[in-house]
Image (cartoon, rainbow, N blue to C red; front, side):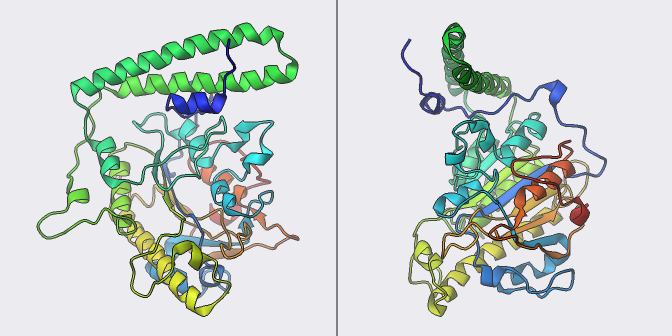
Length: 421
């Protein structure tokens, strides 16, 4: 049989990979009043450290420049200083390590170590919704258990259609046929690999087992897609993307940021998903804001020049203002149990890039909101040489708050329960 390229094969059939979520290994029932949802918002180039981290610790800290738009949510926020991924180096690639704490080059022997927090949560609390996860905006932070980076959608119209518009019968029939064809391909691949297995070394058998794990999850995802084909989608007004006589909606980035947040609210309220990631893109786009004359990437390499920092601050304040509006909407919206969506959703804002000017992955800009946590404080950790406190300790606490019984995730050493729960 011809050689198989795992990544090309999986990408070719358009299905992402994750370990099957077996009922016997599923998530523990959520505690009464516990959080049930997770949202991660990530600016690709992080936030300028000089404007993000408070000087004081505890509850009575003064809001730095970039957090001032979040003042009314101060009691609902926890800000952290000196959280990072100890084993991750610098460069643009560190942005993609936010939710897994791993670099691709360090996982050649075991690609499953690249599994990101959102996709792990999809295995545990995302299997009962139409979409195990919803990946919006710029991609790069979501990784499957097979070590494949997963795509995202930055077009609000496409997201709205995916969430709320039913396919016509012809499209549904074509989808069923494609799913059957994909399933047949997987049957052939699985049988060929099983025949090959006895002739392989132990090392190659282990690699082949990783591949079969990927195949099993592809099969599972295909089955999920087929199961949902005939389930009607919830209805929602297209005003969110089309506006009305009194409101014109700009669907071009960055002005569509508020639309993306509104789509998140609708998706959570309609119980279409429990896990959402939303990425602000990098690149050198020229933001169409007054006072900005250079591209975003050029501004991120400010070298502490006041004129460049002033322009970068305009962009990052916009991120903070839009995030604050999102928290407003989460507070006002109710879930199916009548609770505020913010109370039942762990919201994390952060980036795998600490200081974009030097491409540093140290001291990441991280804050969490809602989720039933004991919020309202700024916590600063000690640094030990180059490394800060493992960010994955926070992820363990987030997992436990969402009802997932685990005491480890990626590079974690413990948890942050003593600070948040």
